Image (tube, rainbow, N blue to C red):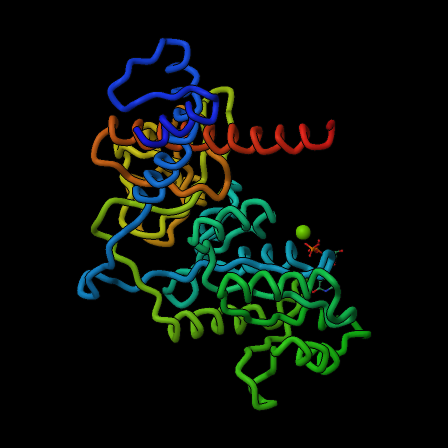
Length: 354
Ligand code: GDP
Ligand code: MG
């Protein structure tokens, strides 16, 4: 009441707490408050929905590391990722890579590693904003004949800001102009110091062309993951991130998600940002139909009613109704944010036209 009284007072109307006001005045005030309430309350609600209790250590089980490949353009990120995928025995048995879902699982000595295609900056930023980093380990690719370049530094800064472990792959060592020592020297400036120089960063010289060093690189990823003690509880509602999503004419909304905790099953109700639905079908990175996906597993899912943005969090819900509520809250929150942005923009414009 005091806020309403104050507002009316500012408009030159003196009212008491018991007084009736006319419909128009009430509406005018209500409109203003509607926006304010939506913004303040709804933003809290969605953050609240995403908040979680600390998990019991006893429920935690080892999970595969999630790895991305970063580095300057033309230093060999795509080639290296291809070489890694083809080094995979499972792939060869299945007759090569059948499908591209923006993520893939590689098996080395019976251990799994999940590779995400170098995330676009946008998705990367969105994931970080939600405080849920998608990646555990970054392989920083530096061409041995080119050395540290602007995007190398950018990648280092990104990884450090997100608290991601860095492993350096010095690529193109098959080239006569390759200079591994020079790359090591240059990276010391960014606090990436090789172990044999008294530092703690792992450097692996590789060639995506001859495949030299690839096996060792993968072993170093597993070793790093071991030290990091990556764990998750598989026995709970699934939760993770949207890696990419698009609309398919035949299949509808197709989303690649990375499960981070819990297990996602066909038939589960889920919400992902503004989208919700029931998982109708799931495909792994080899294009095989699967019934469930556990921690660190990327899967393509069908059944969402809309296309969520890359980087959004997805949550498994108890019921379809809960999933719809989540998505509707998310949409309302974004609308409120947009309104608030328009409002502040409008007042700025007002300022300039005066
Ligand atoms: P990206 O931009 O980082 O994804 O780099 P690409 O994988 O597209 O590679 C850029 C160029 O470097 C291509 O012409 C590749 O054939 C070449 N390249 C990549 N890896 C190697 C390597 O190990 N040795 C040599 N000699 N060339 C490589
Ligand atoms: Mg590339």
